[in-house]
Image (cartoon, rainbow, N blue to C red; front, side, top):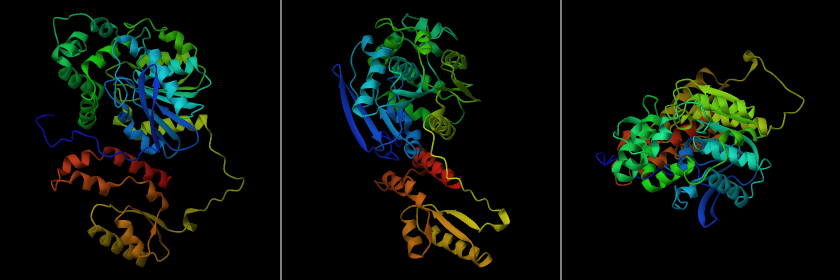
Length: 420
């Protein structure tokens, strides 16, 4: 990354700012959180390994927060939360206790816990020990110490090895003695095993350098039990009473789907396999994962049923309608789009056109007397993103477009919801 100085060292503005942010102190460790929405059923997006912070949920927040209240927090060791020292500070039970403290601090009675990787084990502890606080659990790419799958990586973690090739990089001594950069590049290459995943890998590598090798080593020691024995994973899973949805990629290079298969056996949950997906499908295939999370949450919190009267209209009797998408970047195309709309109306005078558009195009449309669809207010601002990217009058268009990923995911969801 240092050889490409035009790559951003910071993240773009989030597609949605939190309605509330704060911090809770638990046992001398400060945990920061964000809340999106003021009321309603809540989704708790759990942290994962300390190597990344809560921005790894950036592809989920914009969409899910339109349908549910969403709470996120930076796990200890990452983001704006404190970085305690020692493996005992990073045991599974500590992360679960942090999650409970965040629920209390955000006045959240119950939530659906959504977790990825190591966060799945922390969600299981939370659900098992506090069943009244967890309404359901979504487990993505579960990392749990069930006796299934290869165990060699865990055994090699603390040993001095005579090689640093491949998974030998996942080694405490190598991380702390100068190999952290090499490990991080390798590890996220494995996380994002799908082709054309460079953006997701670059984001994760950048976030990994916002914590320290010591924190990553300590948090790994804690997860593996070197900071004190944790309750066996299978025992915890058996005590979970809430509905469970496990999602796992068939090409997961970090943990095999067999772990999620065992998880649903122990919890009576449901497993959805994503063919060809790697360890972090929420980043690589966010639309699919977002729809799965919402569908599961909707079963926990059913929406009100429509009234008793329904009307269906045959296609030939329906008024002609069009949803017109007009880009906010530049204004020349706005005049072109208005001209196209005028020609369409010549052929179909009864055509109803609703515009899905953003400022400054909406000002042009308003002046022309056009109808801007109300869902346009849900769109993340693409024009502002481009303005921010060219703040020094120098725009790297390709990278600016790549850094629009969370905007494009959010805006596709808006389009999809309107069509539905």
